[in-house]
Length: 221
Image (cartoon, rainbow, N blue to C red; front, side, top):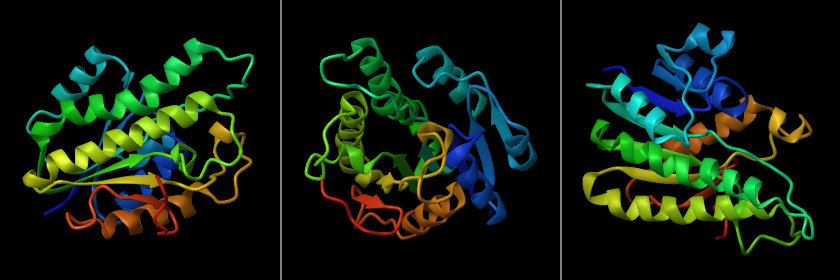
């Protein structure tokens, strides 16, 4: 039976690379985004557009379009990075990052719970910048806080969903050459996606709740 992936932020960058990789592996790919791209349209089984993952109404509309669909893998990928400098912090910007990076994955997952079954998996795209133990450079207050919050949320998801047979991973994609970082990263979206898929392939209930680098390394909280 063909497996189904639902992925947010699927129209470009890491999200698109993951969508393409799973499509090549024979999966049915359902891309969720604000606006599609020709690349996503070319490979997705279904594209659900005009979805703001911070909007309760939009997420409910997304879930309605997936009525009757069973989801084998949900990847919460949509994210926002802004630079917050101590002494000149825009708190509205911080709140926006928290809404997109932390609350939205929880909102989306909750809306799709009835479509996840025993054996389903959830991958939350977080960042090692959400690691408190690994922070030796400071800055990025909103991004770091929102990804740390997502790590806490993902760990709770793993605990709460274990009895239902659903495993959860927190995934750091690496420093990837995407628009988010001005294309100044170290690895391509395709390299990142390949590593992330390998981590997800190895995800089980036994290691559910972990925090991994795309290279397979387990990261400190």
